[in-house]
Image 1 (spheres, helix red, strand yellow):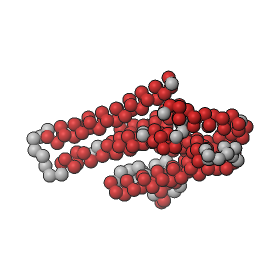
Image 2 (tube, one colour):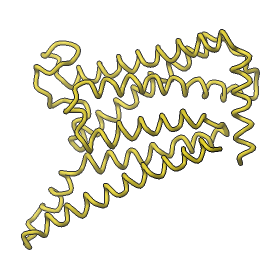
Image 3 (cartoon, helix red, strand yellow):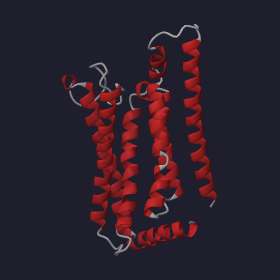
Image 4 (tube, rainbow, N blue to C red):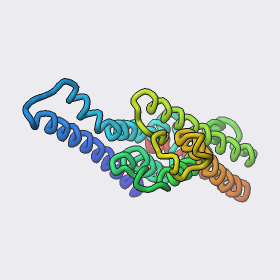
Length: 244
């Protein structure tokens, strides 16, 4: 229960900080608009569009931050609190902090680090999902098939994220896929392939590496301690029902 309280406190602190950022950036834009007492045509859109990525990153975080609670309610499973905290830290760092402090451009390795860890985290979540799908059947599953599902689940989420990045870049001219980087930037592939393609492919490769790592670790743990893992999963389902 102590961990649950820390988890809830951390969730609300991060959400409050994002709401505060949206409010302060909006106030800042309004002050800049009316500072010269003359509001020119298009100035309001310009000032707010300058902070567009911050608003978008904050909005994405707020949406994604409710996913752990939604998954627990929808699937009636108790996700370990530590894993939930790790997930929220990751979402907060990748969606909001990265944009707010321009981390993607200040640290060339930041994007690679996030994609690798995303593959690992989502891979472990995949293990929970595959057991939940089989809750009403035998949980004595083939370790290889469980690991394969976790790997495929994680890679699929990485692909969907890249589709989202491409869509936002195309529609509102964000730079998630680094299409505006100079040719000499450190990326996989060759300069003639363009920075956008090279960034996307490197992201997918790192997502897959992270997914492979988590699926291999999960495979070894499940194969070596199958009955302990099954007991833990069953208790997770029971804990949710007891807490509700």
